[in-house]
Amino acid sequence: DTAVSQTPKYLVTQMGNDKSIKCEQNLGHDTMYWYKQDSKKFLKIMFSYNNKELIINETVPNRFSPKSPDKAHLNLHINSLELGDSAVYFCASSPGLARTDTQYFGPGTRLTVL
Amino acid sequence: GQNIDQPTEMTATEGAIVQINCTYQTSGFNGLFWYQQHAGEAPTFLSYNVLDGLEEKGRFSSFLSRSKGYSYLLLKELQMKDSASYLCAVRALGNQGGKLIFGQGTELSVKP
Image (cartoon, rainbow over all chains, first blue to last red):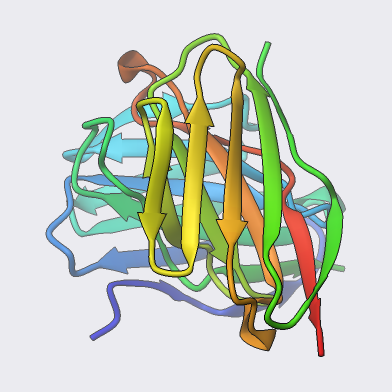
């Protein structure tokens, strides 16, 4: 039933480790996104894929690497984790890039780097 | 630059009406969205405006004035479950891949 799902929901890890977050949508959408929400609640776009092609890559450290194996999946791999990476990461999807297309968010992954 | 401003916090009483304002200055405009986010949960879509005027959806309405760079979300007959953060977001122009630029959100507390 879940439209946009993410795993894991919580991730606690040590500085310097490498970790991945997975996202899947069953809405048949063409476009997927990764957002980061910091402790001040600002939700900021990181990446966007349309039909498996990267179309947005905001000023994000290259330790962050997204991968879209197919239109329904968008994963986020983070190398050499730092304290400042602690945040909630949300995946989202939309039908496409039309201006009326609404983005639907997954439940979020709370990453804590110790 | 891109700037979206909302009040940080608001308090209102159950049964009342509350208006949450949002002003924006962005390099392009392709529509404005309002999302609701309960603590520890995902943002959920409330409304979308791209033309000037009021859009009504049950207890929630949203207004847009593009010339003033201004929107508001109106919540009527407030209920306790409306206590949440309300996020205003502007959609960038087409070649930026549907990017949404979010304000910091307005934390609304509804009191009995």
